Length: 166
Image 1 (tube, rainbow, N blue to C red):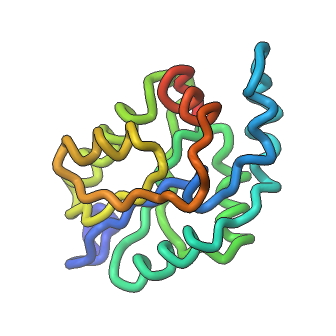
Image 2 (cartoon, rainbow, N blue to C red; image 1 turned 90 degrees about the vertical axis):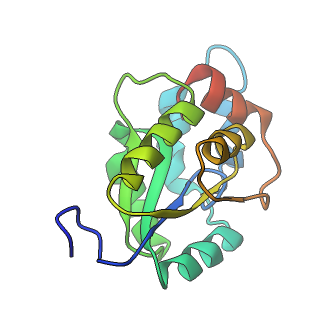
């Protein structure tokens, strides 16, 4: 292992959670109308069904990459998210979440995180379902695999890019 914790020679595969691994549709009602109930939205994440396509991609990438889970979820969700990843038998990996109080769009936060990771080891793939995040990552020079297996959810896009909350 190097000082940064990455196995020498293994590049990062960066994988989003909501909409890629976790089916969030059952909890979108909490944020679909005003006032939005963010506490209920994030509390319900423990019950997210696993998206089989996302699991298959994560398992494949883990065979020859260091996995990093990069989510717009707030830092306060770390324990529940780690439990969810473990309970759903996802490959081990580093978990990066939105810092407390950071309300910037997911595209900015995730591109910044990718650049930080790239300073430690090559980032060979970002797997994400948000078209704005994907476009920003590609514009920054990162390879992207667009997760299209969960139909686009406008409520989730607004939360990620306008509200700056997931």
